[in-house]
Amino acid sequence: MPTRLDVFIDRMVSQRACLDFAIAETAQMTGPVYELGLGNGRTYHHMREKIEGRHIYVFERKVESHPDSTPPEELTVLGDVMETLPAILVRFGPVASLIHADLGGHNLQKNDAFARKVSPLIEPMLAPGGIMVSSDRMYFETLEELPLPPGAVPGRCFLYRR
Amino acid sequence: MPTRLDVFIDRMVSQRACLDFAIAETAQMTGPVYELGLGNGRTYHHMREKIEGRHIYVFERKVESHPDSTPPEELTVLGDVMETLPAILVRFGPVASLIHADLGGHNLQKNDAFARKVSPLIEPMLAPGGIMVSSDRMYFETLEELPLPPGAVPGRCFLYRR
Ligand SMILES: C[S@@+](CC[C@H](N)C(=O)[O-])C[C@H]1O[C@@H](n2cnc3c(N)ncnc32)[C@H](O)[C@@H]1O
Ligand code: NI
Ligand code: NI
Image (cartoon, rainbow over all chains, first blue to last red; front, side, top):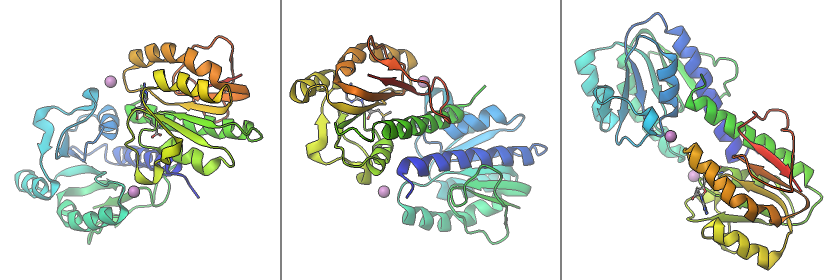
């Protein structure tokens, strides 16, 4: 049986592998990147260092990240994603080149219920060719699920493309 | 430049590699195991699943771990390790087969200052042959530093043996 440490390592390693893949695949796109859930800011820090020439908007209820991984105010979308996602869609349209979501806690059932609720709000935000990286299985109607890149562990990360 | 995500993954992977090595090396010993710093409880959970026939005592100021990674009360040593380590040494003597310390935060200078302070309190607690695994470089006078096992990243974990 994997321990909590094993599962956690697999999740972080898979997140990085999927992010690096998605960043490379969308490198020619110019639309913004959306980070849903800032938390400690580690994946935000990773994206900021690896993504050039695109804005990274961070959607978070309450900013509590490490100081060196805190987004500038003008790229922070404060509030519940159930409200801020539709609001940003109205303002920007379907322009996102990359969306990363890591919104879950340790209650797997709650995470799945939330993924079902938030999927239809995320789905229309991607530009054609845009990629979504998620720590939870999402419930999209029109996006294609992509095979995981080498190094990612099945079930620990999910990839979708418009 | 490694990102914060890279550094974090390296630390967790190194912790696991060093713990697995130390657990195997001390498997024939019967003295207790000490976990210094419970945190979320991921490394405690890992040790609990992998260690048989030895008690694991957890030293922590304030227990705030995940419910399934919370030690029983009789194996929890509540308080500042600067006080609880000497108290347990008086009660148990130099009997520990394995000590794991992950007491630091993200301030590297503070972590190093604390490692200097706590090293002389940890050093006398190990039984002969006992191993210490640390996320910070320690300052021991009589323990031997061991080479890292495969998979561990230099600088992210340290191993010492009496
Ligand atoms: C980085 S966390 C440990 C994480 C843990 N290894 C895990 O995998 O979840 C560090 C913990 O050490 C505890 N700690 C730090 N200094 C301490 C001290 N002087 N005495 C007791 N506990 C301390 C903190 O309360 C914190 O919970
Ligand atoms: Ni849980
Ligand atoms: Ni810092």
